[in-house]
Structures are given as structure tokens and as C-alpha cells.
Image 1 (cartoon, rainbow, N blue to C red):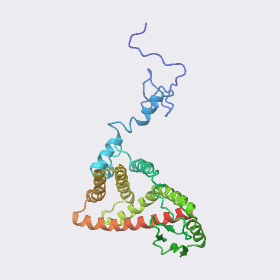
Image 2 (image 1 turned 120 degrees about the vertical axis):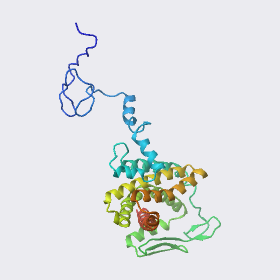
Image 3 (image 1 turned 90 degrees about the vertical axis):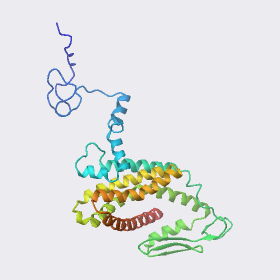
Length: 309
């Protein structure tokens, strides 16, 4: 006669080893494999269990995401310091954190701006024979597109011009800029949507550039490029979080987000690179100038590709 505390016998179709790592199970069978930690009794999860598997360890109140966000938003540079010190398991990894926040910010940006694109499309003077864009008071507005490479294209008094660009690009630009009034309005809506789609790609391209500027400016710190890239990922994740605050369209939150976007990087640079303030401030200014140049070049390139695509 079996004792009351004896475990029930395993079902006939239950494996006698771990399906994940192949380690034999002892008798009685444990709930989890002692080698890899996977559950020993596997079955298809219920819908509730599936949702818990998705969010249990990631978005719970004691989970890594909330712990990471707390340090990201309130302690400038702390996440980078924790990562470089080897304390990584308790936080969301830098690239995953950046992708999570940037995707949420871009989705929010699309939701907020999608209804405003058509409403903000400029009006056209349908009585004018000129194909240049008209302002609401009837004055002609000339269009000019320019970039760091010295190229110029656009309309001047309704006449198309294009300098220092390949002929194929000039032809595509001419077709877009010399549309009739209805076609121009539709085209501007489509251009706005394509430009919005390219924001995430543009920012992702700028990240390696930002890390490279950090590497050059803080060369004396003898840090690896990937360590600078970690700081860049954390800082850009913070900036995307501030973008979401700006989208709430509250004057108080907008002021807080704008001020934080300027002060936070200075404190983070000071803490992570361990420089005195008299050394941090000029380096931060050089970083600002270099990053602004990168932003101008990359956005101009993507704007041109958006127009000719």
C-alpha cells in the first residue's frame, strides 16, 4: 500500500529524459530539469499561460524592463555604468532596449501625425498658370532643395532647375515638382508619409556615427568602440522616450522633455567618462557639432532618396 505522500507515477508517454538537453530524469521525476531548468512535463500552453510567458519576466513590476527604465530615465549614465561593470542580467540589454523604445516612439509618432498630414497640406492657387506652390495669400513660393554636396534643385518662378545631380535624378525630381495642383497635393502627402517611414532607419544609421564621434572625442579613455556604442544606445533610447513625452502635447511635459534632452547627456557624459566639468563641457560641444553635421548629411540624403524614389 503506497504512502500518502508518494508522487503519482509518470504517464506512459512522458519522456524519461529532458527533451531540451537530453539529461535523464531521476525518480521521482522533478518539475524542472536539473541541468537546463526546463519544465519536465510539457504540454501546449493555454492562452492565459501564453500571455504570462510573454510578459511575466519582461513587464512585471519586479521585471528587468521596469528596473531598466527607472535607471534610464532618472539616473543619467547609470545603465551604461552597470553594463560596463558586468551587471547585465538584471537589465534589458542595450540594443533590445533601444529597439523597444524607438519602435514605441515611432508608432506613437505615426498615430499622432497620420491625421495631420493631409490637414497641413499647402493649398494651391488654381487660377494661376504657374505650377509653383502658392501660399494662402496668393504669393508664389519658390521651391529649392539643397544639400551638403552643393547640389540644388527646385522651382524658380515656376521654372524647374537642377544642378550637380545625375540626370536621372533631375528628371524624377522635375516630374514630381512640376505636377498639376491636385497631383502636387497628393504627392506631398505621400512624401510626408515616406519621410516619416524613414525616420527610424535614419536614426539607426546615425547611431554608429554617434559612437564613432565618442570614440574620437574620448580617445584618451582607451575604451572600445562597442563600449561607446552601448552609451549611444542608452542615450538615444532616452531621447526617444522624451519624444513620446512631447507627443502628449502638454506644455509642462514638453518643457520637462526639452530641458531633460539637453541636460541629461551632459550629466551622462560626465558620469560615464569620468571627466571634470571643465573637460566634459567642451567635449560635449564638439560632440554636438559633429552629431549635428551627421544628422544634416544623413537626413538630406534620405530626403533626396525619398523625393526620387
